[in-house]
Image (cartoon, rainbow, N blue to C red; front, side, top):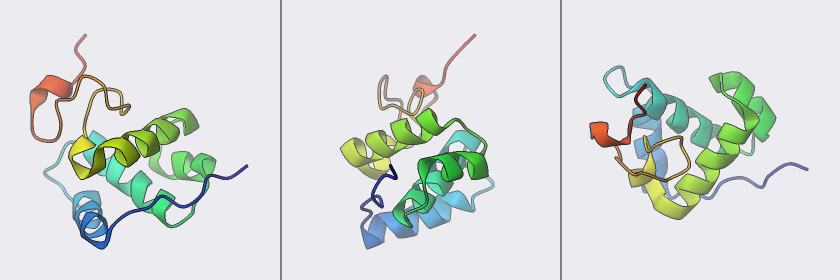
Length: 96
């Protein structure tokens, strides 16, 4: 069963589009932004995962994280929303 398109406001969509083209944001944030834009367009999780180079479960976690935390959630630990370093802070990165 395909997930429904992800609900994204016009403002968040513009920010996701900006992040998806960024060369200065962390790769994780760029991938998340690309995946979320595909999810908003109704692309299946498996196809989204293939296009951005991650596992389908990662896409599912990113969708849940964004749905619960909005644009500020991007870049958090494991993409699931826990450990929240958020964008721009190094605290959300895994070590080791």
